[in-house]
Length: 86
Image (tube, rainbow, N blue to C red):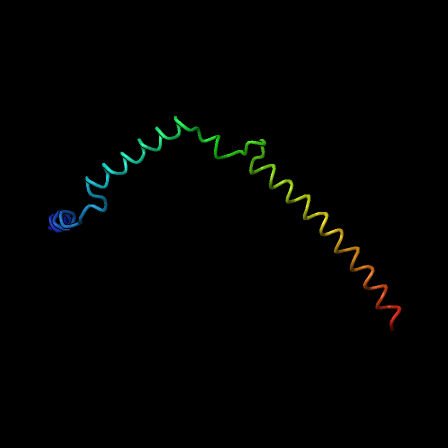
């Protein structure tokens, strides 16, 4: 009797994705594949100069290191100034 109730309950559960939506998703995948073949995904991952996300991140890291050194130098100068004032 418990199996009968489970079967009836399963029949009442609606599909989360309809057949129409499933077909639309497949169409989107096909369009994306065709787009990637025509344009090439590489066009979006690098600039004309050859810069990639990785090279930009390395440049940012180097720049932040330089800024940190400048702040440390400024802090040392400020500490020396404050010790002379007191």
